[in-house]
Image 1 (cartoon, rainbow, N blue to C red):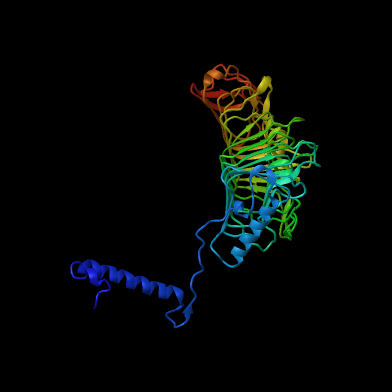
Image 2 (spheres, rainbow, N blue to C red; image 1 turned 90 degrees about the horizontal axis):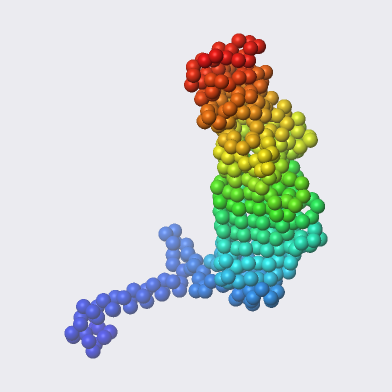
Length: 497
């Protein structure tokens, strides 16, 4: 073959041959890319769409992000561009803000109905002046992620100045597949009359390093997070219609909050949830700094329908949370006379609440099954005594309870207890009907055995480890401790090791 580089062909034949092969290969590749090539079946295969070399951000559509300019129209134009990209199945599937900007907007940002998108804030803040709609509306959006975004909306002065919510996600119909969503390093601050984050049944949802401060100062309760698995809360959207059934349980499973910092510094609890199955709050902090009467940390609504049956329960809730500051209770059950709680795990290293569990006026019975309470430290400010149950006669308990009674916490006997009970200080505790195994971690803390003789009864033995030999006021029965068997005659209330 004649060389295409005759001037150097004589002295560099290997190099010339290599360059020639590369040029021919490139020409062949360009020809194939410019025309459709036949498939194995003889049908033409369409060429892939052209990929833009530049990832467009909202700044490319005129947004300034200078904390002064109204960037509303730029966000509208940017969203319209992304929707055309999505419809045409073009490659840009990312909503991107500039780095460290502050964008002022006066309308709800429409991010509804996107799929497989990345919403990248790049550390920027959106300051919204919208009131009747969410600052960011992402209802119907699924399999997508919000990252590194700060949302600020609302103003003080009650409901007329507050925003409805900061971010709205979730289902828009009963037939929509679960819109799995992820939040990473998202911060929502401001005044929200409903909640900072409202989740309308988006399951397989994950939030990592979520920070919320709801400052709402209206008369009614408002929340940091609403986890609505039953269609109970009103839906607010300027762009999309919600046809979900109201107060009907669907599928609301496997939601996780990890290292969340949720603070209500206005008026209301931190979390409202209903219809949740296998949800988890891990390594998180929740505080209610309300300016009025103490409120609970979490409200659990337990009345909803599952087909023809009315359900009353909570299933598989993992609560690894530090709860403060002096709320009325950690949990408040509400919505139905009967409450069934199955698979609850509570690990709270410093409880400052008046009660661990409380119920509203309509609740007549609460049944715990397969429950584990692990409260290493229960702080009691100003010497006040706290109790595990607000109205112990309403509760039956099956599971394990470990309470480190450092201050003045009182285990006030539920109507029935079956399981294992452990505490480092039994003074002032009352034990109701049931089978107890009570392990005392530090016998030196027990100065008197002030156990109600009439309250320790049931079908099984009561076992105490490290109980002092001088303890008195114990119930009739067989009691074990490090001194041996205490044989107590019925009605005597005293024993000799």
